[in-house]
Structure formats: structure tokens, C-alpha cells
Length: 267
Image 1 (cartoon, rainbow, N blue to C red):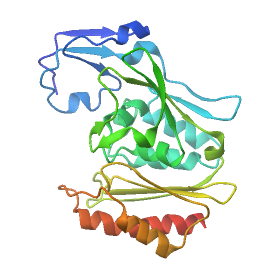
Image 2: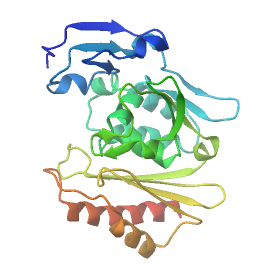
Image 3: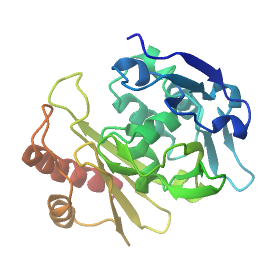
Image 4: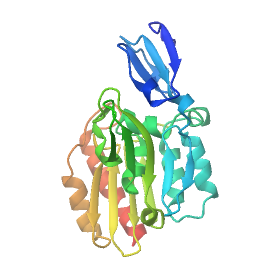
């Protein structure tokens, strides 16, 4: 879709370039930006000039994912990795309603920043305790758990002019076993519920509900819970919603069933 109101476009190469003028917004992969009208938008600030596309293991064994790394590049990196949690990365990439062309352009940081309920990079990072390095518009830097960034379906806690620089996944989470389930009403439809989980070396367990709820639901247990406990916790979780892709009751029911399957696989 053409953005007929855009009159200016500039490429950011320094932090100072990230100061937004009235009517400007950031452009990462632009897959969402060009998908619908953007009323009031008059200028674009392209983040590509900053780089930020790294996928690298640190000396401590953490994974640093640059915000401009594409979802396709992350999935490709994961397929070559021997890390126990790597399969979850390409599983979440494939959970997006996106062609390979979109995956080649859409960025990890953009998917998180848009904060849609079905944002699978949010599911991935929430499950693996990913932390976003956020460059605030006031010049400060904040480390924010990715699970805490969404405020609603399509709304985030990021302030105007804030930008995600990178996401770090800790080494302990990368060494964990993971599991994944997804369901949609249509065979190739957007996720109606995305259920993910991990089991750490000490036996503790994290189970996550996304797509079915407005914001991520992160459930933590000292050990893998029983199916009955998972079903009860999933059914009582807040935030299930109704839209053309599924009712709240359907999302609640399938989330409880599939999250129990995730826990069983981890056990």
C-alpha cells in the first residue's frame, strides 16, 4: 500500500538521528507499516542505517539478537544451532502468518514493538526470559523484560520515540528443553492461540500463553506441573478476547488443552 501522506524519509545513523519530528515514525522492516493506511504519518526514519542486525553468542553464553535482525535470519540461525532451545526459535518464526518474503524483511524488534497478541517473537522471548534493551526518547537506556512490553493487543508500554536496540536471551534459557503448540481456526490463518514452554536444568518450568490473550501470560513453576494444575491455571488466566478469528471461550478452552500438552512434553 502506498503511504500517500509521507513527504520525508531519512536514514538514522546515530542516536541523535532517532529524535522524531512531528509526524515521523520509525521504519524497521516496514511489513506492517505498508500494510494499512497510516493517517497523520508524514515522515519515516529508517533504522537500517544503524545496523543492529547481529545474532551472536556473548562470552557468557547469552544470545544477543539485534532488533533489526529479520525473523527469517533468526530462524535460519536457529536451524544451524545445536542449542537445546533453538527449535523454539524457528517454530515461533513459522507460527507467524507470513510468507518467506515477509520473514526476510520483518524484524524481531518490530514484531515485539508492535505488540500484537499473535506476535510470535513476543512468545519466543517471553518463554526464554528475553530482555529488551530499550533506548528511551529522553536519552536513557532501560532493560525491559519482553513479556512486559505489550500493554494490549497492538499497543505497547514503549513511549513515543522509544526504540528497541536488541534483545538478550540468557544462557540458562538457551540450555532449556522447549515445547510449542499452535492453533488457528483457518489452516493458514493467524494464530488463535500460541502455547510455549521451557524446562530448565533444575527442573523448574515456564509456560506461556500468547495470541489467545491480549498480553502474554507467563506461568512459572518449581517443577513441571500436573495436567490438572495447568488446565486450571490456563482457564483462570486473564485477557482472553473475542475477534473474528476466535471467541474468548474458544481461546480459553484450546489454550488449556494445548498448554497441558506442552507441559506433558516437557515432563
